[in-house]
Amino acid sequence: MTRMSRPSPLQNRVWPTGEILAHPARGTMMGNRGCLHGSGSELGVTRWRSKLWICCVLDWKGWQRDVMPPGRWTALFFLDEVTALAAGHRPCAYCRRADYVAFTEAWQAAAGLPERPRAAHMDTILHAERVESRTRRQITRPVDASTLPDGAMIRSGTDGVVGLVWSGQLLPWSPEGYGDAVALPAGVAELLTPPSIVAALRAGYRPQRAA
Image 1 (cartoon, one colour):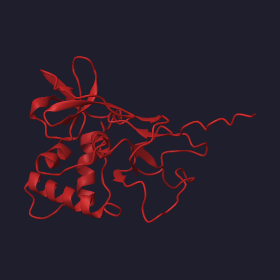
Image 2: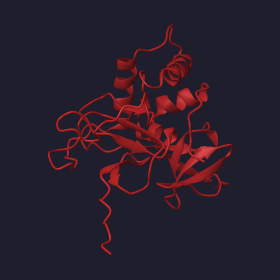
Image 3: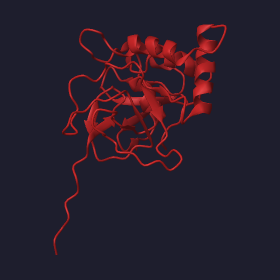
């Protein structure tokens, strides 16, 4: 009997730290930030040119698409929405219209704006919050984890564990899902989720998370 080999996973799984890695774990959401790959389905060094970073549903009206069409777009996959938010992606205005509206309403309330912000306005602010312009590394900030709303993600300052703040506890993150809840770290932690998204969470936006 000939054993069929499984194809190697593509480099399109996004971590809360903003890294894009090859991993066999399936995600519950997808998204994109433009075309990031070359002719060999491998990511190049330019991954931050576009300011439009979105998080989408996996299935939309039964459409079937190539995940890496040449020169067009690169499909990215997330464990869940809170992972996408930590990496700096916002809800898509097209396939997730209701979530997008709820997100803009929360952003409006948090920022004290007279009307809901346009996508380009949010994208410009988020791009400055998530990427350091010179090094292109994810921008993180010191934070007291006990002050964060549900849906924010941190990296523990003591052991480096990446986790989700939820119901006053920390859920350790992995590509396959979350570990058992543990106590929030004492002292200073490293905030991964951009501040404007944290403000929207605090103002009432309720993101989706994997079980």
